[in-house]
Every structure is written in structure tokens, then in C-alpha cells.
Image (tube, rainbow, N blue to C red; front, side):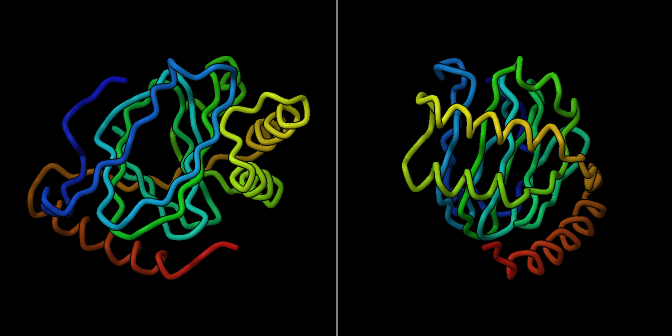
Length: 193
């Protein structure tokens, strides 16, 4: 995974909690499902993966920084990050996190740019089922079929390019930070069940 300078500095370093970054080079198979709970002020520094992945907060709201800006998604959406795209995440509020990582060959049918993707009830149900059973790498024929259904659903879902610009001037950074805080505060109150 490559790393660059952090894009988001919303909280003092002492308050930040590091998020473990998955090394996709060690994953066996074509799918990896991740389930986690991250507390307020959790942070993943800028990095990239050879695999693409969909990031989803089943409770709480999610935003990620990419080179083109900040992606803000409410719980009924996930953030799609294509293979090789540098991204980072800072969570002001706690979230229940779900993600699926897809091997590069599975990403050919998915968008080549990062953005928000609506998460339908089928994908939510498979995330819930895999999470309850602790399935991270599907190996049985049944689980591989469910993982393929997730891939099929993502391929059929349009990407929504809801990216906020990134400012470099300090005055603009303050304005954009205040706007993001307002949006995130409104989104944080919404939980997806």
C-alpha cells in the first residue's frame, strides 16, 4: 500500500485512533469481507490497495478523502474505491463499518473512479449474514455464490459522484470544514437498519 501526506486534519493527533489497513496481498481468493466498529476520531492515513473496495457504514456516516476531493455518504450508501486510488478516512463519530474488497479482475466491470454507491437490501442482507457468521473470505460454494451476488449487485448499481472539493488556502479550508461538519452532523443522526 502506498502512503502520502494526510488530507484531513480535523482533530488533534492525540485524539485520533488508528484504523488497521488491510494488506490485500495476503488475501487468498477474490473476495474479502470486513466488519468492524470504529470509535470517534478514528483515522486511516492516505493509502491505496491493489484491490477495489466498497466501504459502508451500517450505523453512522462515512466520508473518505481521495485526490479529487472528499466523498460524503449517508448510511444507505457506500464509498466505492477502485484499485490503486489513494484514499484516507477520518471519522468524527463512531460507525459500524462493513466493506467488501474485490480482486482486481472483479473490478473491471465496476467504476474506474471513486464515489458514492447506493447499497440495496440484498447487499445489506449478505453483509449482515456474513458478519453474523464471521465470514471474511468465502470458501464454501454457498458463500462464494453470495459473494458473487454482492459483486453482481455492485456492477448493476450506478455510481453517484458526490465529491466535495479540497481547498489548499487556510480560509477556504475553514469554510469547507464548517460545511462538512454541518453535513456530517445531519447524516450522523441517521442509522440504516
